[in-house]
Image 1: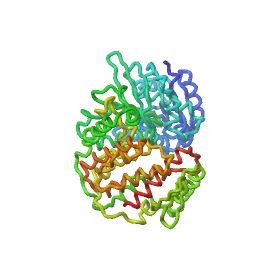
Image 2: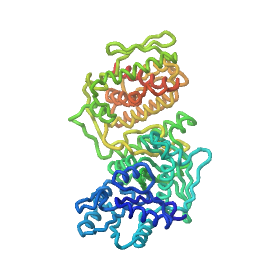
Image 3: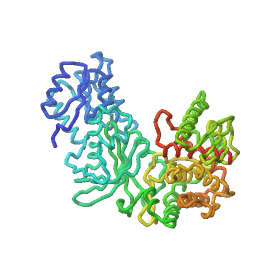
Image 4: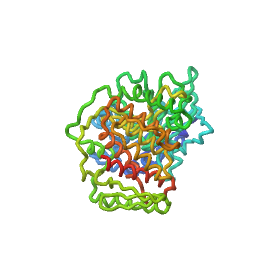
Length: 545
């Protein structure tokens, strides 16, 4: 592979130098994107693929005080190597450009005197590309044909709102990301998509070199999101966790994207499934075994740093901050608009008739049955206080769900694959997160009255680990009941039997997707039913609390 794959940003306010240098670099085989000002350079960096930036120190004018080029360099992501060029080099400018920042690196890899000539600049460019760009152009990238994945598909999954005019650049950039991540390998096969969330995806990747074959779970996505996940893992992961759980092997970053290759000890990743897939083909005994391992082995070490009562916060305040439920100027108007739109959609789909009146929700089901619950709005925004309960906190994953837990074929071992929310939360958080995910992924809510009966039975208990006789549950809900009751038994063993703090966490977790509901986006009947299930459960939880 030749230098024609390399895109260079050339930024200079001298039009003669800009054109001459651009032609020279293009004759050398590089692709040049020209910018005559800081604004043009930033626009290119925002939208286009760039491997190396060559930026004039005085990018606005030739005034001695003009350091706009250096300022641009400092504002640009560290993933792109940068050269500073100038006709007026000084020792102070060199020191400023090469000064190591708080991340332990210099924003500039070299400082070039224009008077040394274009051949000198070209030789430095070649060295910088070898040392700092580090893209494995010879890497053979293969895809599992059964999954229908591709780089354009990954771009669409990660950046659903980007300008499609830049698809080619984003596709090339995410391919570069994998060629950087697997720089020391000969071939990779990307076989499965595990999950997609928060501008990130997780993939099953097998990598081959002459010496060995290795398997990875690769998280890739928007650079800042992936960097945040890695930092949370490094800050929160238990000591020596890599011996039993997921650990970071290596990372890579481009202008817009970043990736982490995670390793899992003593497992062939291609022989595992997400819990969502495992659920569909497992027995109740296997599910219980998997969930017991998840809580006792995979999750337990995260809380080893100890627990504490957050005296300065209530559980409600902690959850409002976590889910970014902020008291808007008129929360009832914003949330009420969503609920009214959902009520209209429910009626049109013949799922239920819902009345909202004076802090209460009234449900009339298609069979004529009626049910009354509380409007969750005052609880969400803090107008109505929750009963007092200690806000016991510890280090937890924060967002365990049925897709980011891997399970072996027999349900005997589990592994975690998402650390983006790892940190300090109420100790019930992982359990309520997983229960919520299981409930709304595995239950068909088209018969809302049947859903109501199921949730009523689940709420009609006195202690967190109380069992409901399966004879009283509809056959189609027995499997999800096993999952929910096993989760509750496991968390009760470490957090206690009290229902109130668990229900408060479950309420906020339940309404999370409801808060994101956009009435202007058309929903399928199944999607509407799932949202109604959330609203129904939220109202029932508020009444129970």
